Length: 332
View: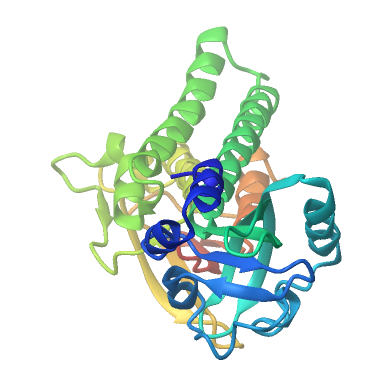
């Protein structure tokens, strides 16, 4: 039953209508010309955790803690009485006593009271909190998708520009570029399944080409940590760069080389949770700091600092390269 049905019913039979109004699931008020509450249905009392003594005889703007005291709403309602106008789905968002934050849609229509001919206002209220929350979530998802597509295009352009061409054949450049792009695709695939990624799954997805029967790469099983999508993508790129460097110059460039990857959850100076991921190489060639920072090193530091909100420490230890990436733990 919509507002027009109620309007017609109340004009025909007040007694019959009152019984039906009491069964309506949405809150309903009948207001006098000065916007004083004449009657309310049980749904109103249930929804707003109130009673007759706190409702009947009071003006609409005096109910609760003044949540209905909206100047624009008052002007709209005052025009309904003399002009036979209507108000549909006026949105009121407020923190209601004993109920909490709610978004209510208010509709109003004038009618003639069947008993005494008095002009009154029929006010219906629909709780649209859940609907609005879902709409907001949908808008956020759409905005996030748009933002992520732009980021992916930017990352792809950066990979193409920054992948070195000097001293490489076209095939070598292609393989280097596609390797980085494939790592990005694998990290995206992991978290796109469930809107988040588990850290062990992400590490294994990126390190998959090196996880052979000889166990050259040892990946920790615990602790299991859920990553937000942005962190998963950035961390996947960092891991790919570390693996690429290890395959070219470090432990994965020789048969006896090994890489250990583990992590722990700790706290920063303010007691906020942080994730610290460690990369340790063993059995590879002796390492030393490069004369200049290449794209891979710059990308690792940039992703750690600006995308993860943390830091990266790169240690060219004689016994094997080591890296530590620390960043805040954000819950998906």
